[in-house]
Amino acid sequence: PHNVAAALIGRGGANIKELQRQCQARLQQVNAGELLGRPDLRLITTRAESEESLNQVASQVIAVLAEVASQTPSEMICSEGQLKLSALLPKALVGAFKGVDGGAVRRLCEESSAMIRVRDPATTPGSAGGSGSGGSGVAAETASSVEVQARGGAEALQAVLREVNRLVQ
Image (cartoon, rainbow, N blue to C red; front, side, top):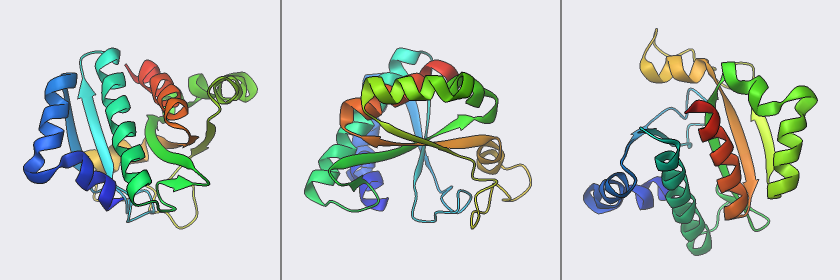
């Protein structure tokens, strides 16, 4: 949502510049919500040389999400006291993420107390499914990805993002 993106970016981009410096990563906000069928959604792409840097970014983003949720709770970012966050995962890695018969996701849910749902924007009713202008980076990336939706406490969300980062790195 807009308020989380605004808090993450900060006045004049100060917060995101500091986050990039601290984590040695490159973050960019992309307006891809319509491609995912949710125009109020904000997508932050992150690029880093190491899994550790990606995990540092994830930790900082979750801290901002938790702070915003405590100040201005909304159904978009928290539900029943649990934070909500989504990440894109390349479709080619879905099998590795889920595991045989969903066993890896079940273990991750049990170990972290996170609730996880894997959603394919391309097949979800009401979503634009990556049908954006032919081959733009965001449209292509969204069309070849699934959305991993996670809900839980900050530590649970960090565990989910650590696993996503491990697979994509």
